[in-house]
Amino acid sequence: MKTETIGFKKLVDHAASGKFRLPEFQRDWKWTRAKVMRLYDSIRKDYPIGAFLTLEASNRLNLSPRLFEGVAEEKESIESYVLDGQQRITAGLALYKGVGSSHYFLNLGYLWDRAVEVAPDIADPDVTTADQSREKLRALAEDLDEDDKYLVARRRNNNPIDLVDSHLLWTAALADNDLFGDAKERYLKQHPNRRKFLERFVDTYFKIGIQPTVPLTELDEGMPIEAITRVFATLNTSGQRLTPVEIVVAVLYSHGIHLRQDIEEFKELSAYYRQLDANGELLLQTVALLERENPKRSLLPKTITHINYRKRKNDAIDALDRVGEFLTNRLGAGLDHTGQLIPYPAILPPLGIALAKVESAYSGPSHEKARWHDRLERWFVGTVIGQRYIEAQPTTQARDERELADWIDSNGANEPSWLKNVRVGSLDTIKPSSAIGKLISMLISRKQPKDPLNKEPVGGTGAAIVSAHGHHIFPKAFVADFLGNGGRSPDSDLALNVMPITGETNRRWAKMNPSDQVKDVKDNWPNELTTLFDASFVDTECLELMQKQDKTQEDYLEFINKRGKVIQNHLASEWDFLLDSSQLEDDEEAE
Image (cartoon, rainbow, N blue to C red; front, side, top):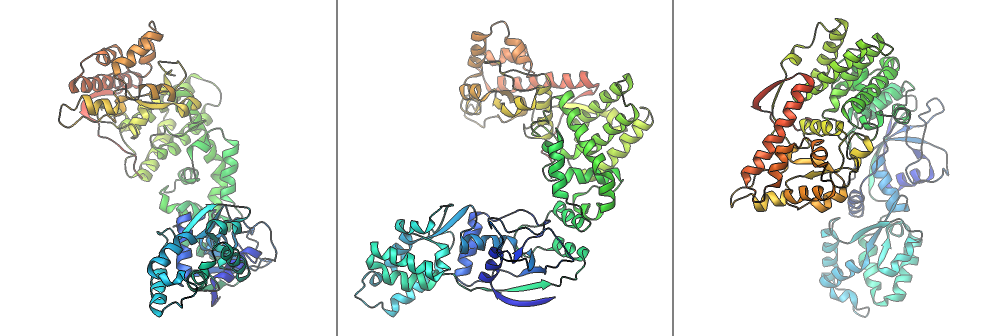
């Protein structure tokens, strides 16, 4: 291992030439424009920008090197892998080389106005700039930061140097004396009185050359791959903190497993997995549960080994695919297109494992398999109503996986004790985005609703769910303006005040009195009014309240209460749960 001090620009040059590359397991991530501009401001002021870590490349160790984002071709052979500093070097490539989707420019017009404001003599080529003016220009350059308008970003341009004609000086010219000289002369042809401004202000305070220097540590090529990935996995010198999944990516890579590639392949092959698992976390938790290991997120780097991953990955994907199909076909979740109705993602691994176990026990169509699907459907709904996944999710996952296995092995005798005592309380305060709110949306989708005005599907399939809009039956503005009675208005953003309709109808009804909404439907489909609304659990009593002309706050609250009871009764009768008068607390999903 060796440590040296090196100019940051040299690191960027190495990345641009291909001498520096990234290992395959390094994440694909780059800074936002704001962070790139912040880095430029630090560079021009020669502020510290952190240390860098590389690994000497060798034939012995092939980490599938790839070029930095935006670098089109390799000009030189690889010398080192960058383990820490990817984002800063990628930002440097944008600033020094113009690599990437954005170009960055000094706003010469803004800088000129600010410079003349503090040092008017800089605008007169025949007057020597006073020492006092020089000091004011130095202070101005120091005071300017990335939040000012002196640096701007634009979408990549084929001829960025030409924008100097519009007072925009490309940052790549600030790092290259020849480019700077050409841009300077071009600018002075149009603005001959700005030579001192360019030479004594821009050239002095805004060019970026070798500075700053940075500490660079290089690991020897003989370092074991296990040690390298461990170093990578524990880094957090700067940039984005590594997630447990990213750490597992690094750990598995040392054993020849390309987890990111596996995940993308699984998403391509599966009809449902893409909607269930954004980054592979559920896949790894399912592997852990299949091995009876703790599925806690923070422990995944310890619980997931190359042995159990290889052993269980296909079973895990099969389980998640089964749960996606199950919830789509039986509860209208639409997981072939979207995951927006999933109440708790953590609920999916134990349910998927149970479904796979049932399939193994009853391979073909049978009465027993259908009976188990009914039981597991009830278990899913009961889990959400019982709010089992609000907290301690890994513990609940592990317990549920064991209980479901025992239930199936006992042929139904050992039903989970909590499931026998699920009670459906009042839904009056439930939010649309909460777990129970999503369950309500799922139950509506299960009834394959149609937009009451144009009869377009707004549920039942993933495509319909994605296109639907959550319409506030009593619009927010209506509740605030007409039901407030001079005091505090009731909450209009409730699950029981929302139904799915198309965007077109939502735009029409957004501020419409509920009675006019009903009239709208009556005028078009007089014989189908109750059927169209009933699919969203809006029954005849609810419709009567909507049609009242002089509605009060009490009418709105009664509507919420009556619609809530319709859904309560549906839950109790459909899945054999007990009714309860107590209020279910809102249950925004736990992180």
